[in-house]
Image 1 (cartoon, rainbow, N blue to C red):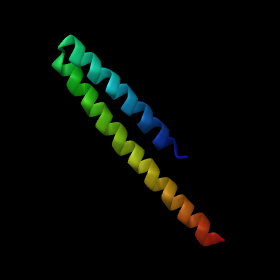
Image 2 (cartoon, rainbow, N blue to C red):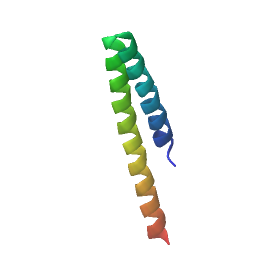
Image 3 (cartoon, rainbow, N blue to C red):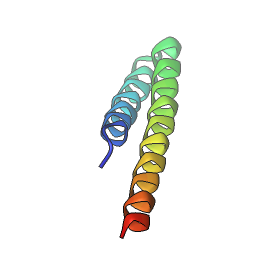
Length: 63
């Protein structure tokens, strides 16, 4: 598993927590930061998935 997938998942979780905290406290800036962090995490996770797929394809091609 690529490190980008792990870091992306962690960033998504962190963003979700920020977003909920922002909603609960009425802090729109914190809520927006959380949403942005979630999106960043999703993108990073997708990049890691693509790297994993490419690595798998190259490994399969070698065999």
